[in-house]
Length: 220
Ligand SMILES: C[S@@+](CC[C@H](N)C(=O)[O-])C[C@H]1O[C@@H](n2cnc3c(N)ncnc32)[C@H](O)[C@@H]1O
Image 1 (spheres, rainbow, N blue to C red):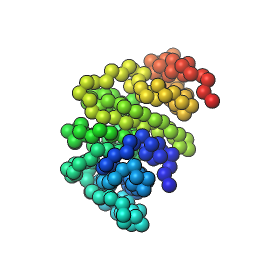
Image 2: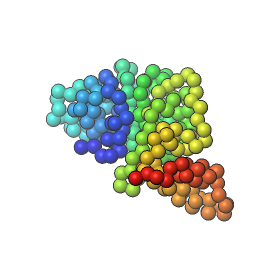
Image 3: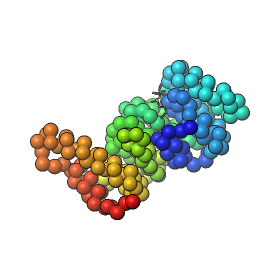
Image 4: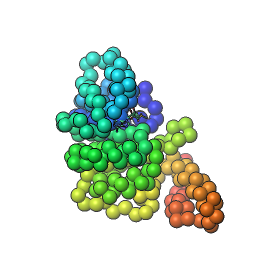
């Protein structure tokens, strides 16, 4: 029922009581989590009425599931209890806006899973500078696209992250799997094109990628 990206997001979520899916669209992720009893209740949040109605339709066959629908910009119009938030399938600026406008609510959430379609390194810097600690990460490739996924929670003590951890993720580096290796090669090709267009020899980013590529060449 779920594509690879949404399945990886589901895997990162620890069983909990109430999950708020910001920008849920079709509602597939909360539906899967409720059916598999990973969560007890879902709040489907949408800024647009069309996707909210679509999600309601997808839930019609499952009247026993505990689900609430909220038309809202992020968490803005919701004040109930939540212990997990997912923000997925949006660009960095939208995610940044959603977190900043309700930062005090986000500080109280024990697990926040974020999957940005753009500017992953800027997302990690934003998370870090607002004292959200990265507590887990994963990366999947679905068709030709790579999807890094980041799990965070607020921590008053700022997490110390090196440049390479901000760029490529402390847990992705630690776990270092085959998809991550492919992702590094993909990022290197993009960076090489940029460096070539700027008529430069190399860049700090290429040096970091080369160092990470050299860490593990023996993946199956
Ligand atoms: C591309 S879909 C992603 C759906 C799902 N989260 C996923 O990852 O497959 C993005 C959804 O986010 C909604 N959205 C965009 N900005 C939002 C905001 N500020 N608050 C709530 N929903 C938002 C859009 O209406 C759209 O349905």
